[in-house]
Length: 172
Image (spheres, rainbow, N blue to C red):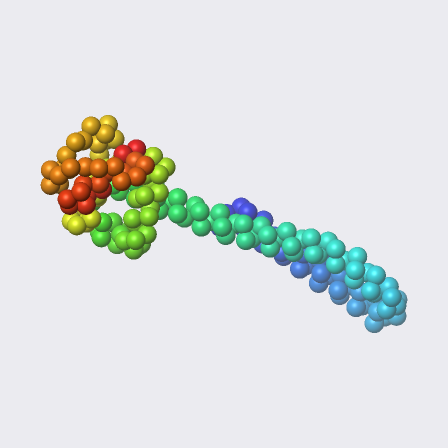
């Protein structure tokens, strides 16, 4: 659990605690006859302001912490994927997907994200289902497909594709 989410929980508990203590104090005052109904209403309104602030801000921090946790999870998965590819050099896509506990479509998205961040260079043969890590300088000098020898054309920013076998090369 991250600090933002924990801070949100603390504020929610604090707000709830203040509401409970104030509610009990006001109810006791009314039942003992020390406090009239008008005084209870004014007291309730005065207690409502800090309770609403604590609870509202606590809820906001809790939600933000959840979003932050989700982003950190994606970044962790991307780091894990990059480490697997770079340490092994050549991996089967389905093996990596099983090892990481993600589906192939999510894995493809992660690969494209890593290419967009310019932290991964390599190529992938979708027909074989194999992902290769390669030095970016080698790929920039590439004129023919390493898989079939076919012509390579640019398919997007940092991506080149073989016209014949569909192998994608990621240049970062």
